[in-house]
Length: 278
Ligand code: SAM
Image (cartoon, rainbow, N blue to C red; front, top):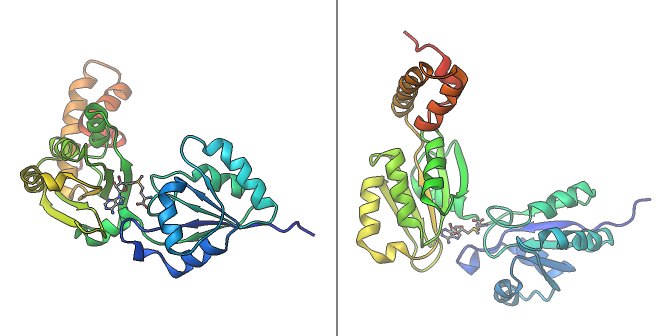
């Protein structure tokens, strides 16, 4: 017979409003034998509020590799473990991926306890297409790297979701305007579920003017949602990509020209070879 195994529960916690913790999350956080928390001090308040006295262990970016072996051992001894992060759903721009993978590899059952996630909460109120979307998480801290990544997304037709911090929100929006143009629609969701929650929406040009005019709009935590490229925008990007490809391919091998034209214009590389439809 198999040895008894614990279960790893991946538990979502609030992104601001403490009442957003589910009943099931509370029950599980009270009954498990161990809680692996991104920051045990940070989670202390929430755990005290729900009456959880479960032992805690810190599992963050810097110790995930060393800690997960210990946690898997505990699970294999038959103890249930809950994984939580500082806010929202673990693994979503938060630690835990290596632990979950290791648990799966070890045959340990893993179950989600779903709940708040800033990206999904923001998407649900942004008023931008929500049928298809891409989660990009945090962009690079440096403007050049940020613009390069945004450039790769310029022809993406799905809605784009980014996380951003208060020190970079304005610079990030300005880089987005430089790459996507000021007419592209955006929603900036700030401090969701908290006292100073605001959601600004409209063209990038208009939203940047609002954020610049009010220093409070540059404080707190942000989700930035950018509308995907319209058919017209995608066509214009492809036309520009083909123009640059034609120029470059006179000077270099077509494969290299296509790679460079795609990087410069954001047009999909494979389509640069194809002849435009009549
Ligand atoms: N795991 C979390 C989740 O499920 O959303 C995300 C963790 S990530 C380290 C933190 C980032 O999420 C913040 O910098 C911000 O971009 C976004 N975020 C978290 N809480 C938020 C809130 N209440 N309002 C707006 N954005 C928030």
